[in-house]
Amino acid sequence: MSTAFTKTLAPLPPGRYGFWGIVRSEWTKLRSVRSTLWTLFITVFIGVGLGAIVTSARASRFSSRSVAAQLTFDPTRSSLSGLLFAQLAIGVLGVLVVSAEYSTGTIRDSFAAVPRRSWLLAAKVAVFATITLVIGEVVSFSSFLIGQQILSGKTPTASLSDPSALRAIFGGGLYLFALGLIALGLATIIRHTPTAISAFVGILLILPILASVLPSSYADDIGRFLPADIGTVMISAHREGNGAFNPWVGFALLCGYAVTLLIVGGVLLVRRDA
Amino acid sequence: MIEARELTKRYGEKLAVDHLTFEVKPGLVTGFLGPNGAGKSTTMRLIMGLDYPSAGSVTVNHRPYHDLEWPLREVGGLLEAKAIHPGRSAFNHLLMLAQTNQIPRRRVDEVLDLVGLSSVARTRVGGFSLGMGQRLGIAVALLGDPEILLFDEPINGLDTDGIRWVRGLLRDLAAEGRTILVSSHLMAEMGRTADQVIVVAKGRLVANMPIDEFTSKNSRRSVLVRSPQLDDLRTLLQGAGASTSDESDGSISVLGLSADAIGDLAARHSLVLHELTPQSGTLEEAFVESTEGNIEYQVRSITSENNPRKETS
View 1 (cartoon, each protein chain N blue to C red):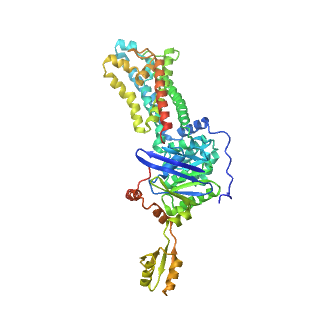
View 2 (tube, rainbow over the protein chains, first blue to last red):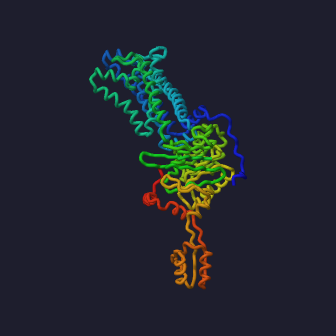
View 3 (spheres, each protein chain N blue to C red):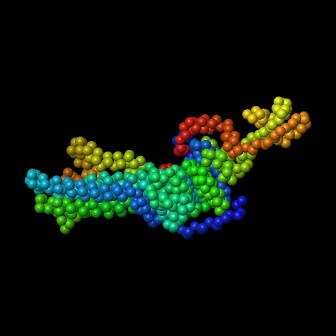
């Protein structure tokens, strides 16, 4: 029976499957699902749109505020406040990039195609990081430019030629980028969409509330390590007080969180059954 | 070639796969039979490196799945129908898999055509029926034109035409010299498709042999007898050590004597026979026979009938 086969099977190409092919595959995955495209759109819409609304509210109230408040007004930070909403959309996308594979079962086809699971995760991170960085900077720069238009004539404004403003604008994009990777790392560990999103929202919104009810000496010590507080510093052109980290130290910390979560997630990804 | 040696998988306390040793050879359709929960799906996941064995090993083309140079071009698997993002199109699902193994884009169109999904290739998978999902799963398995193919319950959800198509496809793939492992809990279906059977129950190997041998070994060969002198004949046959049971149409079914022996016996005692028909056993009977005595399995099969859930372990 095993002598007269009807077909000679094609020989395998030389070499083996590589990283670039997995990156292309991850890009296909991301662009071929409407929900990821929508989430990206919402990120931009919320970031820029809500930023503009908050900024115009501040502009109209500016003259009625105290002199102290007027003197410390940070037009850069005000125009970038939409990023603090956009971060939630980026987080949801970061979670979905991993957790949707588990909830739909696609992960089994993905692992069958790429048994070297660390490469799969690395390719996911590479594609997602590139996209969040681009989207983050687009949102940040647009928010700034639109915001300064809104503030113009009513409050002091900032310009791109101001190095501290420029640092804050870049910082806004970098902040979204780092948060997206933190969300992706969380999802790699947790795998379950609602739980991973809850964890992300908890870290971002609940931890600062918990920290704020601690005695103030502890609150500042703990608060400066929290992503939300670091984010506020990163999008501010003025120096933040209260012993907060310098924005670049803060960004390094966020990257440290993301890398730690991704390494833990990667080890679990390789070891766990699919 | 797939080779499992003492392959074992434990989930907590439960042994899902219990020291399985078998080979799946090229050029044959090997049926992987067992009731739901017998460990078939788990074994297939272990073969494809999705789950890790607790003990023992399994190789494809003499290597662990993780060491394959071009996984999709060497092994193709349909492990679960519709385990695909509902918002993605069939084309894009296949494309993103093809890209990982440098499979050309035209092969995506080729397999879509082969499974009859070309017309819905660009629509979202969420709207697919189970049968269409099953066809897409088969397209995934065939994508890399692999030498080794695993199909877990491929005919679930297919209509009659679909079943006939899958049966033909499996036969053709085997004729091309590929290694085909196809699981099913439907014994009768396997009887028409498989050359070889591997039977498992409760994670343990029950049989691994050519299907004809399995059927003849494990099914009782009964003989249907019709006679105007049935009472005398019955006494005579029982005296010779056979057991008889009355059939509803007035004939009797005899176990323990061949048709030849029954004919000789009747002639020697001048009894008239109107019919003497050997009944060949079915794969279904053989399966029940081969797993009988495994009380745990019988209990399981009763519960799984009352509670028909999809095999998850």
